[in-house]
Image (cartoon, rainbow, N blue to C red; front, side):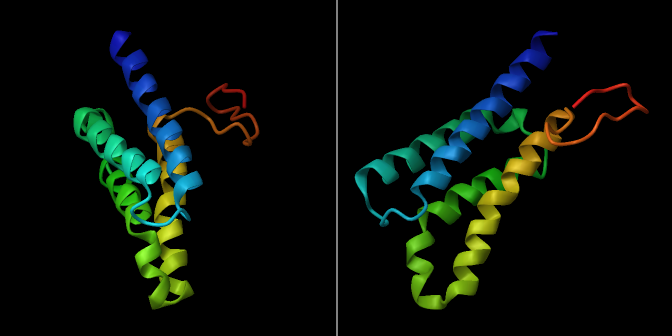
Length: 116
């Protein structure tokens, strides 16, 4: 039971860090606050990545990288920026799916007896 609780804790922290990254994505590269967050995320990932199932393990790290270099993509067009944003946003679903819990916006799954 302890392993399940620890895994839930890790996934919740991943979600929280992802939220912070999303709010910082548009801040200019090199900003001290953004740089500190990115460093903290890389360190957290290094210390907890084995708790994350694939593809979340690699996609979370890729999301950090996308936020880190987001503004350097501005000269390459909106398609590159949108692709970087999508790399970040897709991690939310991976976190939710990785725990195997029902999404809050889903209807009850009667086959498993799970409520939303």
